[in-house]
Length: 253
Ligand code: SF4
Ligand code: FES
Figure (spheres, rainbow, N blue to C red):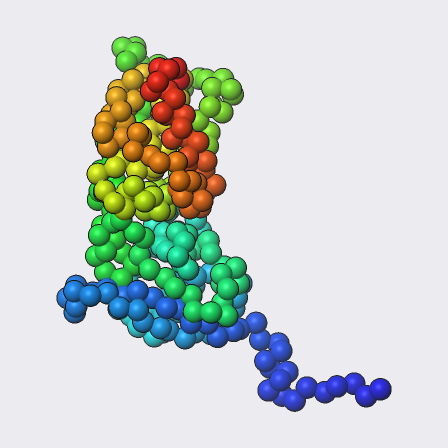
């Protein structure tokens, strides 16, 4: 039987990893219009590349006005959380092949925070809630130790999960309570309070619990699990919130 022979164009196409995808991006520029609009961009991209790579191609080759945040490009800095196909994700951790590239890929800013331009939101309320829970070690010990403060492996394990937070806001901005009322501290602030409340070296758990006992604190959580689903670090966010609620009732931590 004769071996099928590809013509030159077919051979090139078979060898090329590139596919054509449509990025459908929600654009907003308050200097141009008070209304946000969707804009489509077609790009050639390897499906093994990430959404962030596609955004870079648009910014560098097609439209330099496209505005988004990113820094590390490796899932560490937490600056490129956005809604991709309706779900909060990090653009630098989302592969094109995993998000149905046959259809337009929708990309918009995370919800619940004021959009400043395109995919960039005002993070001030988010970081204010973070600051409010005092995310640092507080010791009432008058004698400063001369060496590191030791703790057992079991004590360290108690808050290991919540140390992984990169403050991307994917959890808080996926929470319906936060969407409806931006006063709620939100999951990320509670996760970062948890990280110190359950740290055996810290002496301010009671203070942090009282802060979260506020009307805008943990009791606003409706246990929807959106936050846990959204977290790119795999933190059990809802579980951490439940543990803080329990500590408020039992005063054991
Ligand atoms: S808990 Fe997860 S989703 Fe929330 S800010 Fe931290 S890393 Fe992001
Ligand atoms: S760019 Fe740093 S987490 Fe994505």
